[in-house]
Length: 325
Image (cartoon, rainbow, N blue to C red; front, side, top):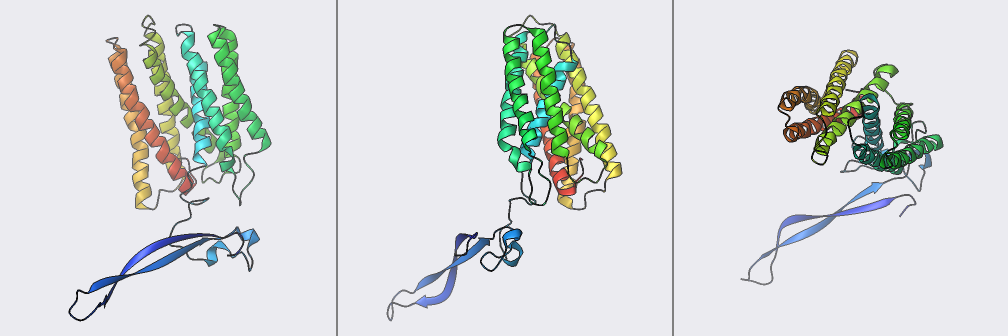
């Protein structure tokens, strides 16, 4: 076996029409021939040679899912950064006086876990034929975001709201800087400002949806809280949805339409993840008129599912078509 090659053997049974007779007048049994299909994954092109052939020279019956069309690994750190950005932006924009400190403590622990996930998967942003996106500075920024989330949760536990807000702003800036670094050197069919704006608005959308839904859950433990915070969080979510719709529409005008049928189906699901949450968010306002926070939280669950579906399909379209649909 040559250096740099891996062998994957797949047995395939093929029935033969020849019969093995064990004697005259006896029952004939069909025989089976075992054929082994060998798939070779060669070493990178820069190391190709006589002992290590290039990938394109070896036919394969199976798609290579590493670094190609079926590679979903780079989506994980980007999605986590967007979620951190959206949650921290929601904390900083909306009023905090009427919400108990325990809610923000748990929220910052969530961003701490997301920061750790980002640090563990950040290397997947690198590509052999592209710039080094997961640099040392990028790692330091993600680790600083994780530390800020931890210290912020401590401050909210100690009821030091002003200090907790400062750490929330630090988490917001760290995640925004991470999104800028993740988009650096990324190919796109739209202007760079529209690419960045789409990333940030998508982060506000998914992060705002998660924070609003979790705030609705928080009313189960903090039954004495007024409805005003949940109404304001829902208003912020509505603004995020409208902004995302505007930017997604601008991308449709700027970038070409998806050519394949599968991509057109993804695009329809992507817009279902925008129009559906818009309608359901308006329904939440009507539910809150009756002070029914549990029903409002159930509707917000459906909002989260549709938003995650829409953003996931948008990420698939962006990977294939280089446009932030």
